[in-house]
Amino acid sequence: MRSKISMKLLKLAAALIVAFITSMTYSQLTGSELTGSELTGSELTSSELTSSELKLKSETVADLSSGSLKLKSAESKSSENKAKLFQKPTKKIYFVPGGKIGMFFLIGDYEGHQMISIEAFGKYIGTGFWAEISVPFRFKTSPAFTDIGVDVNVMWPFLGPKNKTEIDPFIGGGLGLHFIGRDREDSVRTSVAARAGMGLNLIAGAVFFKNYDFNVILEIKYFNYLREFDELRYQGIGLNIGVTFP
Image (cartoon, rainbow, N blue to C red):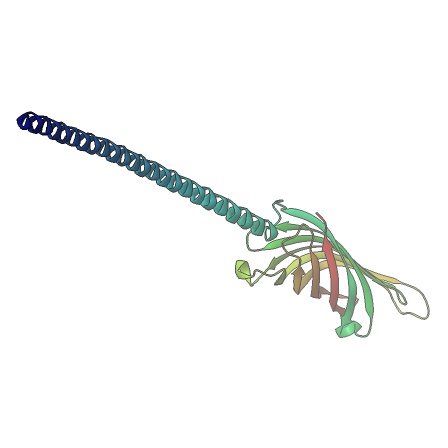
């Protein structure tokens, strides 16, 4: 009887041991599966992080590239605006008309007399010089004195291309053919002396607004009639202001 009870106890203990071992094995397998899923999740998380880093880098590079392009375009626009502000007139003018007015002060044999001077001219612009073809007309009254001529003068802006200002000083000179006449101061009868001859011009002055389509000219001009006129010398100094027209 006792042996039967002991056998049943042994069988029961063996069944308990087998059940315990089975449950332990199952729990270990389940844990390992969970660990694998966790590892897989971590791997997925790291791949997601890597892709987000790549996206962030690509977006940063794209932003930097677009920003640099915008900056370059802005700089180019600003440089173009600066160039426009300092841009010289693009109109190529080689021959322009103009006019001058001033006073002509006689010296020498006719000292003490003044004449009004009016002059129309055409200006040809060359490289490093310009030339003028002018028709000066000078006159006075009491007694009457007139001078009309045709002059060809060449001017040299001696500061050259190094001068970046709007004021361009110059010197020059030329020759012309003049017709002069005056009333003789005779108490008995009125007579007129007239003669034609060559005249010499020596000129100094300055051009203002030189880079524009119009210019303002200030000049001092010495004129000498190269022949005697009624046994006297005709010469003087003129002060003129003029403009050129586009």
